[in-house]
Amino acid sequence: MFYYSHIGVTIRQYDAETMTSVSLIKNTGFFKKQLPQYNYAISIIVLAVIYTLAARLGSSFATAVGNITLFWPASGIALAALIIFGHRLWPGILIGAFIGDMLTTGNIIASIGMSIGSTTSALLGALLLSKLMGKENPLSRTINLYKFFVIALTSPILAAIIGTTMLITTGVVDESNFNSIALTWWLGDTAGIFVFTPLIISWQRNIQPPLSHNPKYFEVALFNVLLILISFLPFISSLPVQVVGYPLAFISFPFCIWAAYRYCLKQVTVTILIIMVVAIYGTITEQGPFHRETLSESLFQLQTFMIVIVVTTLSLASAVFERQRFEFQLLEQKKKAEELTLAKSQFMSNMSHELRTPLNAIIGFSHILEKDHSSLNKQQLEFLGYISDAGNHLLHLVNDLLDIEQSDAHKLNIQLTQIDLNNAISESIHFIEYMAKERNISIQHIEQNNSELFVLADKIRLRQVLINLLSNAAKYNHENGNITITCSKHNSSYVHIAITDTGDGIEEQDIKRIFEPFNRAKIEGSRIEGSGIGLTVARKLVELMDGTISVKSEIGKGSTFTIILPS
Image 1: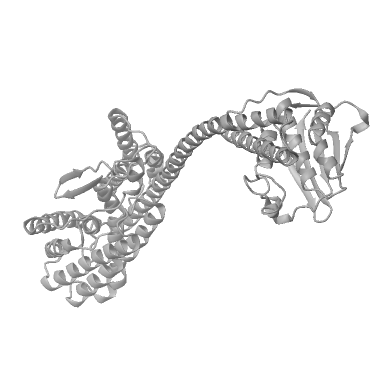
Image 2: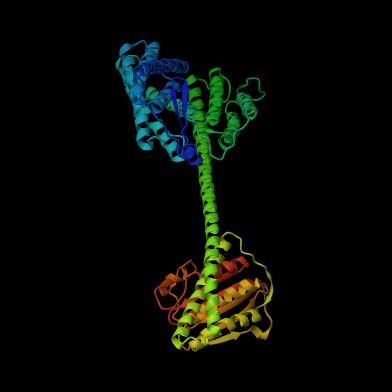
C-alpha cells in the first residue's frame, strides 16, 4: 500500500500482495511520482503561497534587529515539501521566500539573496536526508530520526550565513550585528524544522505501530481536550503564584509520553503541535514561564522548550515503534515456526505409520524364519540375522525420531512416579549384557551404602535413557574395558547417576555438539553403528523429567555421563 499526496488530495492505492503485516512495517518510505506539467506549476504556486503565509507568521516573532525571528515555520514547511513531493518543487520555496523577505525588508537585492539562501538550505537538507535514508521515512526508525535531527541542526547554517551577509551587504543591518543575527536566524530555522517537518511528514505518511490498537475517537478527543487545558495552565496570569522561572510548562510532558506509547505518530505530532501553539501564544502575550524582559530572550526560552519537547517525544515514539516492530517480527517468526512444527509433526506421524508397517512385516517374518530354520543353511541363517538386526535398528531409529518430534511439540506423555533406581538400572543392564560380553566388557554397578534410591521419573523413559547411555558406553569402549555405574544422593533432593566408560574419550570441542541431532562428532564414518540422535533423545527425555544430563571426558581415559533427577 502507498500514499501519494498532491495539493491536499490523497490518493490511496492498494496492492493485494503488499497488504500484509510485514509490508506495513517495511513500507515506510516515500514514493515520489513525476507530476504532470500543469500540476507541477500549480504545486509551485501553492507551495509559494503557503511559504509566504508561514513567513508572515514567523515575522510576527521578529526581533528589532533586522526583523530576524527565533521561530521560522517556513523552514520546516519547505523541507517537508521537498521530502514528500521531490526536489523539483524548489522554485516554490524560492518564490515564497522572496515574497516573504520583500514584505519584511523591502529590499529587492537582499530579498533575492536571502531567498536563494533559504532555498539552498532546504535543498541541502532534503538531499542529505535522501542520501542517508533513501526512500525511508525519516521518522520510521530511531537512527533515521537522529540523522534528521543532525540535518535539522546543520542545514540552516547555510541560510543563516547567506541571509545575514546579504542584510549587511545591502545595508539593512549593521556589520557589528552579524553574529547575533546569524545565530538568531539559525535558531529560528532549526526550531521551524524541528516542529513542522515531522508534523507534515507524519500526516502525509502516518506510521502506525504494528501492535498498537486503534483508539476510539472519544478517547483521542478527551486526550486532546485535557492536553489543551493542562498546556494553558502555566500561562494563566491569574495564578496565585509567580510562574516565571518555574518549569510549569513541562506539566504537559506526561501527555507526550502517553501519546508516544499509545498512539500513532500522527497523534504524537498533534500533541507536540498543541503544546507548541499554546506555549507560543502564552509567550507572545507576555504570560507564562518563558516571558522575559525582551522578546528575543522570551523566544530563546520558548525555543529551548520546543526543541526539548520535540526531540524527547519523537525519540520515545520512534523507540516504541521499533520495539513493537521487533515484537511483531518475533510473533510472525513464532507463527511460522509453529506452522513448520505442525507440518513436521504431521510428516513424522505419517512417516512413522508408513515405515512401521513394512518394518513390522520384515521383522515378524524374520522371527518366523528364525524359529523354523530347518530348511535354511548356515549362510542363509546369517543373512537372516542381518535382516532382523537391520530391521530392528531402523525401527529404533524411527521411534527415536518420533520421540524427538513429540518432545518438540510437547506431545510426549511423561508420567512421573517414584521409581526404585537400582531396579531400573539392573533391568537396563540386562538389555546390553550380550553386547558387553561380546567385547569382554565388565559392568559394575556401585550402590550407595547398599541403600534403596528412589527417583521421580517416568519408568519407561528412564529405562530408555539408561539403555541408550549404557549401549553407547559399550559400543564406544575398548575391548576388555569397563563400565561403571555409580548412584548417589545429593542434598536429599536430587539423585546423581554417573555412567563411566574406558573408551577413547571425547574432545573438548565435540562435547558441546554431541547432544545435537545427527551429530556423532568424530565417530562419523567409523564402523560403529549409530544414528546420532540417541543422545538428543536422552537429553530431551531427561529434561522432560525435570532433570539434567551432562558429560565429562578425558582423551584416552574415557567419558562420564551424569544424569541428575529429583528424588
